[in-house]
Length: 174
Image (cartoon, rainbow, N blue to C red; front, top):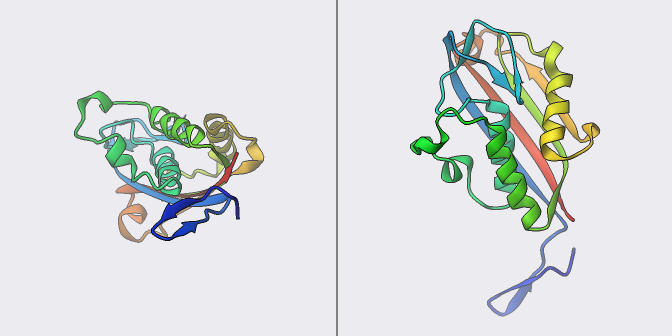
């Protein structure tokens, strides 16, 4: 434990030198729209129906960082009701979360994420996505892991109606 304590009532509260956050996002798919995952445009006949560019992976990672910092979620900071964010590149949201993280004295230790898509097959893009995510986070590529899973033809992901992403982030005190 570190000595970054605060007073709560009669006793100090000690905070560990690390924090963990969990993020998740889902977007529907529709023909003729762009499909961007992890900051990489993926060729496909369908893309995300979303207020921003709909990048489910960057949204999940942004949410995980905000969660680790106990700062709420992506919808509180970048609401889809705000016209300023219409069509926004999701790297803007992630960059802002990284700025808030660094401002509070934290750094990314590692990120582990999973994208759930029946199609397109994402295995050929996993490395490129991981490299882009690492660039956006300002970390070495070995700190980012990207997995791809199908929906096993079950539910909205399996019926190719949506794509989901989940991310876990470990932050450490800089």
